[in-house]
Length: 636
Image (cartoon, rainbow, N blue to C red; front, side):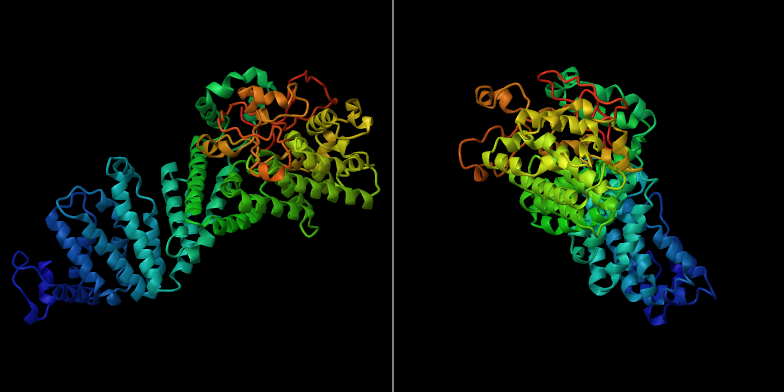
């Protein structure tokens, strides 16, 4: 630094550096002249760059010089030219706040971090051409260098992490206040970086996403919030589709999805934690890279926690609207999505009355609208059927009203289309019919237990639909049809005995006709979640097939009051039961507060059988003897 003294006016020159320290004004003169004379004499400039280059060991004396250099540069940013001073810019870009946050020096490293950020903010505000460069520098700190993570795992790791990230977001807010267009420039930078995170470790990606969500809920969230959440959902989808169910998974899963619940009952109540862990291990074991599974699981949990935070701050409705738009744009038509949709499920569970109802109505309207392409309408009704069947927090009143709309639509379709059975020509109709049957497989008992909903269900014109020439009972998935007819017969829902002749059903190949290449006939998007950590959040709000009371259960409703263990069999929790029922016929609409997940969460997601049906259901057995995994299969 002493060499720079020659460039300072005589009246400002002082003794050598070891004597009294140079003033800020003197430092500014040094650095200004070094920058201006870089072409004629680069010696002072090169020395300046050396002072900015990182040192492995930074003693207090060097730390003080570094901070003085940074402060001096902050005062003359107008003289910095990226074209002429590229080595200086490179040296600054290589500086990391994380390094100083974990540095072991006899000096307050926060002063250095503050000086670095002061320089970055000054560059962003004073040099418009460097705005993106400064924003990229700050976004780079959303996740620390890999070697830093060991330090963050120490006892004071959280404090060190907060020292960096609080300053980074503070600098972003300061730039946004001084440069109104900065948030609009920031968004594409953040989004582009989240797309290029394939090489990141799970913990690195999670920390980056955590800062995205911090932006969404922070001071500039009104501007960037509508971009951060959809970008994160896109990343979830990207990871989701990389988890493949095909290949070895299909071979290994054959025996598992044909197991009867009685064979795996020991897991239901006694081995809850083991079940979730084994489900995740199953994904990893069957050609799903461990890092991808861990990344997706951790990111979904992070998003669910963010939703809880939004609920606490009264922002859930606003965030839900953003998620809903992202769902319709990205998730809905991504057939291979297996877990991302549970973000929407959890948002609905946090606010059933608004978000939960809104999601169901939006899906219903998308199915009914002729403006949407058939693939979108079929996906929407598949989501609707799976959602109404699995969401414990939805009222029976809502379920009944949506079933009514689906039945009315299918009935009107039958009156307008007096044609013979043709799976490919009437895909949307058959998907609607299958949705009605699938929902009732889960919900029929709970609806029939409420007198006025039972009357409403009986009055629905379903029987003409099933007996129509389009013959949906022969086209829809046999497993769904068989379970539906079995429950309908036990509930005496229909008068016609010919509906219950199982042998007349054709092979399952017909369902492929309306399911198309994507097999939407076998798409049940809210089948149980196999991600260990995510499943623990979904579990309290989720209905398992093993816990559903069917109409053909051997025990009577009255017996439930005499046996506490039986009373907890029904996984449906009707949030509005007291408002809905005018008499004491509350029946089996009960809450299961003691939830014990099982690894083998069997659903009625059916397996096509080439030669018709084999009725292997004995009295009291409520699971289909043969099941076929859906795109998002039931847990092991």
